[in-house]
Length: 268
Image (cartoon, rainbow, N blue to C red):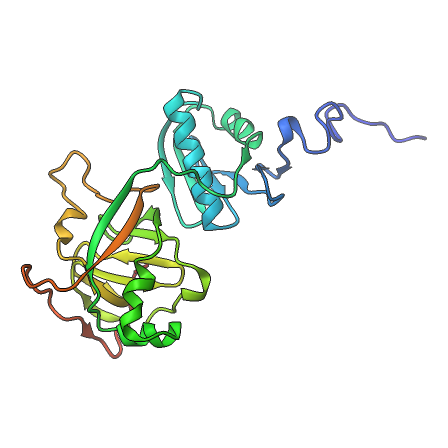
């Protein structure tokens, strides 16, 4: 007796091997096409949210930028919140998650995020306590760290750890540095620091394990809850650093304090 083929089982031949509209399903997950052939995953995150997992920070930024572009143009289904992470984007408050997942699965996502031309420039005094260590890791004289670090345009990939704390990408891989082996119990507000592929400016004094290379003299600008836009640096914003000779006219930040045994306790 020949086995019968039951209706509804087997591939949808009309849709092709990738499933409907180019997406490939994996147990409730949907893959999104990219121009590199690496397929991000779309996962349900509760009843009215989707979590999109991408292969790296650059394509996460590109996907986030495309979401914002389409929402501004009115071509994206209603989404209450779009929250980027290191390699994920959360879409919350989605009325029809399955329909949106199908829509996203048809997108071709560029590798590099577009630029909107807006750049925020932050003045920095390169006087950090880890300046010499970073110079050694980079293989350059200490006085060259400022020129190297300030020569790039950075992009806010996502925010977290503390209000106003923005993770900036754009530092080339040869200049990535490890976190400190011993984190500090207190990193002063305004500290400009490096860890892995990221640069950041601490908006307030907190514990932290990043390598501190300088000081932004006006950290109160980074987070102002009385402003219509509390955070100065939001995802997608481009950032440049401008070296200052000194901060004689500003209040000197308190020195960072070492902690021999205290763990960092956070993402920064």
